[in-house]
Length: 86
Length: 140
Image (tube, rainbow over all chains, first blue to last red; front, side, top):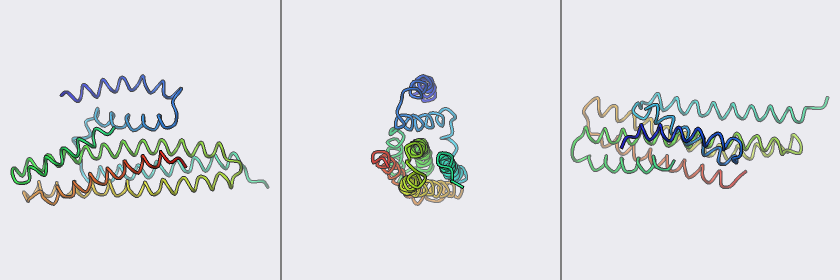
């Protein structure tokens, strides 16, 4: 099985699907698509062949950083919606 | 997205089957299983991060007051934090198994411990995927 060719084909299909989902899809669908895109990106980059402890730790660190950044963004948006009265 | 996890389990079974035979083959199969596990957990992570960010934006949008928004964000985050702990366990398991595999390969020792750690990593990945499914299914 030529996984690289399959990944490329699916990647192309994903670009088309993504544009439709971005316009009409639910948050649920967008989240699933993000996971699928991540999977295909990894496959296409051939990253599955390189695995060491530092790589794994870096994935975890970037995950936590993304969650924290998203939370700060939500906090800021909430504060902007309801500014403190002086 | 489930496919890599199934592959990881199949590869792990192959690795276990190889234990009595070629040491090199066991290490290679376990390494493949770990790599697929990492890909699966990364995909689950990206699904959850995207979903959680969208959920937080929706909470902010629907908030009737700052206190209301803060309370709902806190409730959502406490549920996400529980899933993050599982993700941390999964990444840590994969890292530990990866190190054990490198050690077994470098020193020519039995890969049994590394294969068992790989099994733990696969279990952790399954737990992560289940937690994300429950989290998304339950709303917040």
